[in-house]
Image 1 (cartoon, one colour):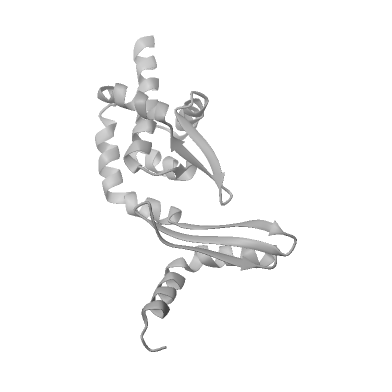
Image 2 (spheres, rainbow, N blue to C red):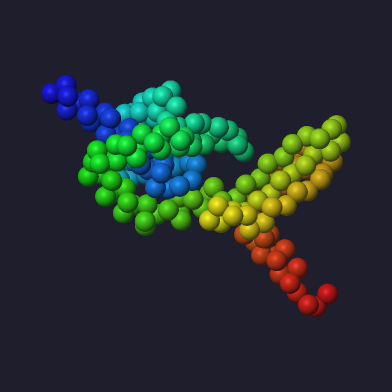
Length: 177
């Protein structure tokens, strides 16, 4: 009985590594949680515990960007997954199917990035990006004079990036100027 319980714990941790590898992009806690809960492969509390243990074991890294925490599969985590891949249980089929159907929707919120940094008292550099298939569609730096402007630009970019991007491209390729 203890062996089965121990194997189940290891299998669930491998499943989390498997999800990270299959998604092939850094994910937030809520995105990983969404995958785990919607596929019903483990309960929320166990998942959070396993996630913590994977970070402690350095199989996953966590970093902060845009006031959000992202999880990244480490080289060590990838090596562990590859070594034990045959042990990933039948739930991997559920995961594969779910990711195939939902990857675009899950990633849509991570594709728009907006950050800023303070250069000096009256200068803030705002970086705006739209990313598709790990490639920048646009990467724009804007220099503004206040933190308030920088924050507003970031907010508006996140809410309207596809519209703004389309307008920029249209303006750039238009021959009517």
